[in-house]
Amino acid sequence: MTPATLTAPVSRTGHDAVPLARLVAAELRWIFRRPRTLAVLGLLALVPIVIGVGLTLVGQNASGNGGGDQEGALISAAVNNAFVLPIAAMVMTLTLLLPLASAMAGADAIAGEAAHGTLRGWLIAPVSRGRLLTVKAIGVGVVTLVAVLGMCVTGVVTGLILNGTDSLFTLSGTTLSLGGALVRILLVAGWIVLQMWAVGAVALAVSSWTEHPMLVVASVLAGNIVFTILGLLSSLDWLHPFLLTNNWAMAPAEVLQDPMSSTLLGEGALRAACYLVVGLSIAYGRLSTRDG
Image (tube, rainbow, N blue to C red; front, side):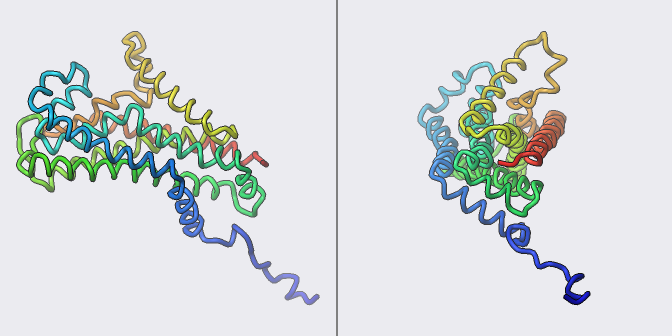
């Protein structure tokens, strides 16, 4: 062999030679071919429609039956209000349905593939664990993004069909233009997407330690319930700023006021970003030492 042959770079083959965008596209095709993923996304998109039609049928009587909590107040405010309806729908699903969708995606991403034996192909292939986690995290993030945006679209369309464009007014009594209302709705949607990305990161962290997807879903939802209960205990006020679910029902309501505040939204975004970093770090630490 000549010196040139010895020093020539070896051509790369396999997964390490495949562009990241191609791996992500393949992952997304696999995700959106799952019937349960499509079913969950479809059910979430129906929630604003069901709420809007229900409030229309009930009429003004709903304003007196909303309850004293924040979610009940939002539902009451959504009567004949096309601006509040999509926000109220997203806040209602923020307690259980949206975390369920994010947890399911995180569970299928790693634990699901481990249960079916397909994850081992990723682990023994010449592909870095960081790249593997990036592909899986993007897949979970896209599922969450599609779920929230789907609710936004159906919520806005339902509100405009039922109430018209002259029903876009804040809780302060000021009327918004269609563009101004859409900007505020998208702001809430982006904030909720970030919260669900944090939930998905926690799901990926749990998923990297087990081969049972249902265990991941149960653990994430149980943690969500525990956090919610702890947030109701006034004796644990010192702990509330560290709970991911803190002010989940109150923060989105800031955009319904005029002038709009951003204190709770900012705190929630920072907290979600911390959970996102910690969750992905734990998942990467586990994947980097996992061999099957």
